[in-house]
Length: 382
Image 1 (spheres, rainbow, N blue to C red):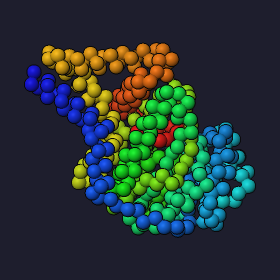
Image 2 (cartoon, rainbow, N blue to C red):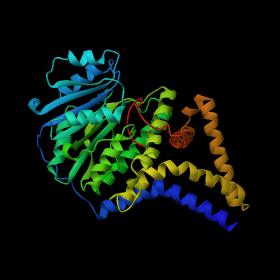
Image 3 (tube, rainbow, N blue to C red):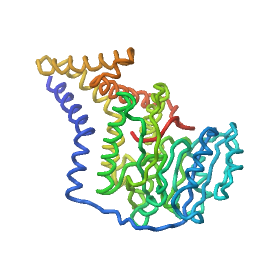
Image 4 (tube, rainbow, N blue to C red):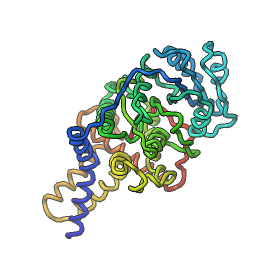
């Protein structure tokens, strides 16, 4: 029984560390070891890379938004990399009246990573800003992101993704709360060193530090920042640069997005194994705590459930039935969506869906079907 009890407490400790211990550790570090970012108003040449596929519904509005940035027009170029689009996207880009907008065609779909690589290869700016077609930038985004690069230690600066409709439903509210938690972690990582990743729809890098992505990379917004950290530069989070999006109300699309993103966490282990080596990854403990431990939580939950079922003491039996009750509520909410609007149940349901998606992502990765072309919906964090 001792070994079963050990498994129980080890699983409980790892889950607690992942969601509470790591943020608390960062909070302590913010009191002991702050590393301020020396922001200053600078206006280096900037290339905006917008990799798209079949975005005819969004591309015109997105280009208008980018062309209205509060930044010297002569210092901005906008490179739209069309990855085999066949819905009229290319024609809309070519007919756009602003000469700063340039089209780069990838003849047949090669995937997001290859499209991004093509955009950076063609970029002439000192700073490259990555954007997606769906979101809209605040007018000062480029100016705010560029200001971070006045600090020579900064190699990558990520902005804040704001969801405009996160309170439209209780599950949406739970996601909004989770995203607030994620941003709090990023802020603390930023002020104490480097953030583990960025929001793919709003971040910037020094072009000289960019490393081409392997084909099929899902989390370009994690691998690119980590490549920059490996070169001795910081990755920072700047909430003064904001992009706006909406939470998808399509449950199927939202599920696919979660699975795809969490598959990307697992994929990092195979395409960039150096991330798992303490001597090669300068922020190894942060990476493990923020990215890898989170996708392992469902397996620790399974250990918690199984070990508590096998331990005869009333304490463990009570915890077993409490877990069983929570999973039953999550299952009932999946079958009866109206339950998802109930406070408490909405949190249990969201937590269960998130961890089920992590298991599904692991299965996709193990099957070798984790290569990415395009991700649906928005790109926030995981």
